[in-house]
Length: 139
Image (tube, rainbow, N blue to C red; front, side):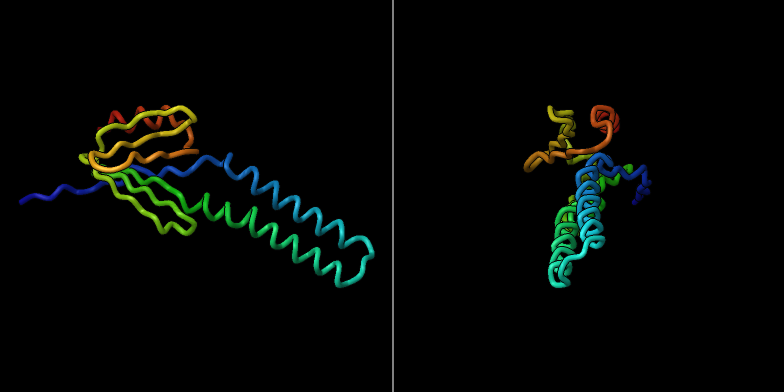
């Protein structure tokens, strides 16, 4: 009985362009909070503005940033591991033998078609056409 060793080939994360809007939201929240800290308003109004800016930053910066950073695609010699979700709770392991087809789809998507089940669409990956071609060559 022989076992093949599994070699780690690499990890691919989403493109950093997906963080442009969250960073703009953080800048806006910080700018509004800074503006109202320099003018004299009533204290309750100032604290209300700070709380609203914090909630805005939490909703439009922190949550998308965690979601962006918790996605990755691990490539090994025997399988692909896709981890996604807000805290990486959804994980899919696909052996190379289970993948029927890998294509580049309209809208800069890489589509993995397993032997059984629904196709898996991967969006926002850097250079998706080259990625699909190199994954297809590995099949």
